[in-house]
Image 1 (cartoon, rainbow, N blue to C red):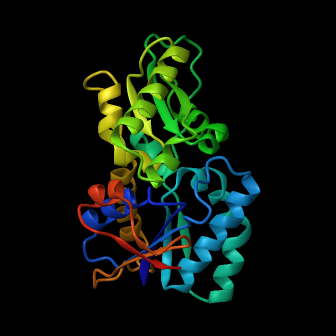
Image 2 (cartoon, helix red, strand yellow):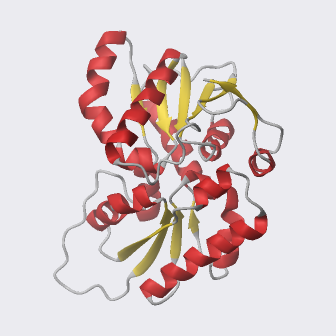
Amino acid sequence: MAIGVFDSGVGGLTVHRALVERLPQADLIYLADQANAPYGGRPGEEIVELTKAGCIRLFEEGADLIVLACNTASAIALRRLQQTWLPGYRREQGRPLNVLGIIVPTIEAATGLPWEHEAERLSDKVEKVDILGVFSTPGTASSRVYEIEIDKRRQDVAVFSEPCPNLARMIEEGAGAVALASEVEKHVKQLATRVGRMPDRAILGCTHYEMVADMFRAALPVGTPLIHQPQATADALSLYLERRPEYVAGETGVRRFLTTGVAGPQNGLVEAFWGAPLRFEAA
């Protein structure tokens, strides 16, 4: 088998690289739906259908386990697909298949608690509240998934999401460093203005943003911890594979990169992040 990694564009490469580092022998197939990127501003039903189509393609290419390396797809489509589509598709194919997201491991990393944990409601006022900023696409922000799920587990954490409607597109298009840094600084300032101060910690709630993590570090106060989704996802997937022996990650280290967009080399920002030239096949 192989592990499939799906994203609307190149942002999921940040998760892919973390998986390579954590599971170097695993066979990985990456699919970027660049023909329809970005997902952040699309209606929910479109996101569900596009995500399902991407999963089908990866299953057809030999993946048995897929990671949705996209916050928008994970927030809006994952539960629907797991509950209403995947059980029937799994029976049709006659083999173990599953689709996982990146939000659960991110919330576990942000709270320091397992997903199953739900906090008791406190009658007394919490003395000190930790401000957690989430920078994300508009789709992820409007889902309020981070606010809702973190509030269930931690009463001493207040979550504030800042939608960044242009940032993922700019990264996809290979925008220059000055323009990207300006966009990041704008959204950090907007979040701080709404909250009344800078966040104590931050989640880069779009996998594209890991490619400009240094710009977020520069815009935030020195030493502000960033919760990194790729590492949290890789750690969670490794534990999942240990618990679920029916899923085998492969052992030949195959790496394939597919796109629904224009095949060929990616932009300079992507290649600088990847550390080498990177060419995508036509999906």
